[in-house]
Image (cartoon, rainbow, N blue to C red; front, side):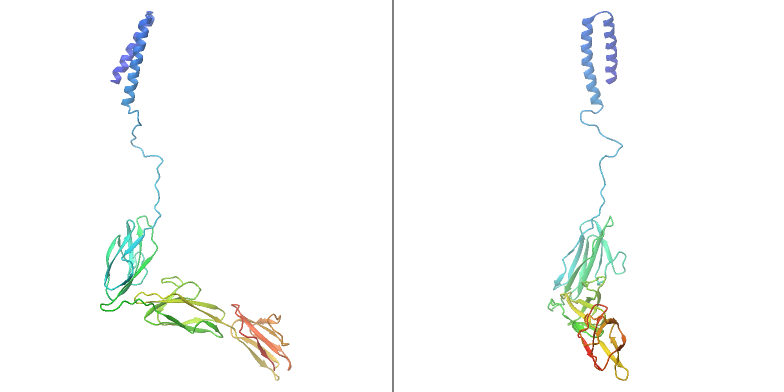
Length: 332
């Protein structure tokens, strides 16, 4: 159709030129009007055949202006039912918030990808059986297809034995000796009032199950050493076999230096001062308060010369800044 219109228009244009040459102006005007109408038809047909009037379709190319976002959101795993105390066995399901692989343990160990005691599977994982008469700490996390790993979670399930009551009482842990000020190194023992695992820290951090600075062991834990030169705050709690957790407790231990005077010479007028631990000793030989005495030095201080009438007063401050409990005196 388009080809026909083009031929027709060419023919009519030639005719118009002919009529112009023959001075047939009236016919020329008619012919030009007719050509204009045909030109409008031609343009309309051309637009339709090209798919105009509403935006053409694209082919063979990609859309512009789009972008692909990167998934950086970790999945969220929930357990059903949540941990707690039950009177009968339960079946637990773990479900992630998106397509993911779930990793879990039930023996108290921390699950890791490829771990010997770690069980894994595609979400959801169902039918994790918690039997009657047991206490199980379920630890789990999920990893999605983009490699985003969820933070470790845990739930504790305590199932009472048939016919027995449910244990809901937390253990109570005691420290022996209790915190205080001591003159020498000592060993502390932590003891729970029932079968339990005790968790403790001695670096002033808060102990946590699986914590990097947390020490744990079955009650009792003995021989926690408190050395001179340090003030130690021992923080601890216990978890019994039913999963009951004690509230956090703490004890603070300080080892203070103890200074002794050792007399030498026939009249006991040459004295050595020695602290029980690394410390700086301060002293005076006129009976005055040695707190700000310029006479001082690291322990031991030897060959202090005194007279029969001298009153030697002294005390020590250890390397942790702990002062000796009392100022002492010596005279020959």
